[in-house]
Length: 194
Length: 270
Image 1 (cartoon, each protein chain N blue to C red):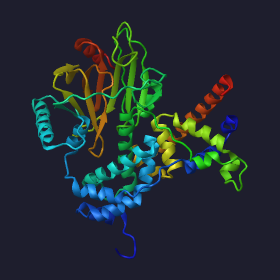
Image 2: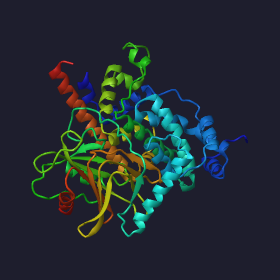
Image 3: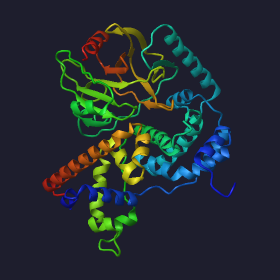
Image 4: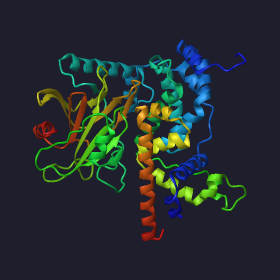
């Protein structure tokens, strides 16, 4: 391979002509965000890996329908999310995301907290994630794409298959519902003592 | 604890979500490239519908015999369309095998909450969130529905779940008497496919003067997404289904009602 990495468009063009090695390069480029997206939808690691692999295979076969001028990443993620959703539905369960154990176990008041940690501790982040876990899928996905996976508004729109202009309003609606859920949780906590 | 969460500004809430994202227990990232490339080289390209239908029927790696059976199925489906009946975006496949639907999970919550229909919303919210005009049955005696909205398929989908009662006999789904789904199908794209088992009946009927399908018994539905990839929809109520369209919107009404009753309710939608 040449010194400079090939653009996505060049790799896609080669893959379309049957160069599976070039497609492998695209897989390596996007497997991290693919597995993470699948994890957000399916809620467990094994399903996430399977769904991502299956999605890469399907995307290769759908490359003929891919618009050459469109970004590859959100197009791929739409396929990934779809695969992960099918797996979750077949299993008949909700996705439940978790924080890393190392984060959970870290004693509060640990050294050098990040600016966000200065605002909120681990326990509060757990509460926030629990509220996100119980949201409907469309709310959870718009939050996940923008904040957990760092997609742009435009990419988020592509990945969700919605008009670009609607991402802002979807996101603010999701955050409003998240706040309402937190308030409801607190009311429940007060009543139930848990 | 939670009161601090509630008092966050929008900016702080967003920053906290970013922090949560950084701490998520994402899986280790495996190297998928080798496995994907191997599969591309080993597995011959199959028509995606065939592949998906095979999975639904319980064959992970469809053999030649099944492929032939399914090819016959696709031709049968084509014949139904060629016969002059076409609900926009709907193709019916007659499948040779029966599948066992996955057990429905028991979770408490609003009626229809376990059917994976999307977010529970008010009807007014549903109307804001989809790209088409939402209509509801106006037939007398129907209870109030619970509404759900989903982003998928593109353009949105609204589902109305009606509790069982005097007007609506019970279905296999606890407490549910009728499910009405509305979504926009794209022109010229077979959008919804149904796998219907041999034992069941498919009948060509009319709703308000336009062609419709009446399907008795359990079935599996495929939505074809914008990539032409089938998305499986499991049978929800295991009841009878009426499928019809109005303009660009495709409707699906599932219930344990008789054909005549279902058509009457369908025709009352406005």
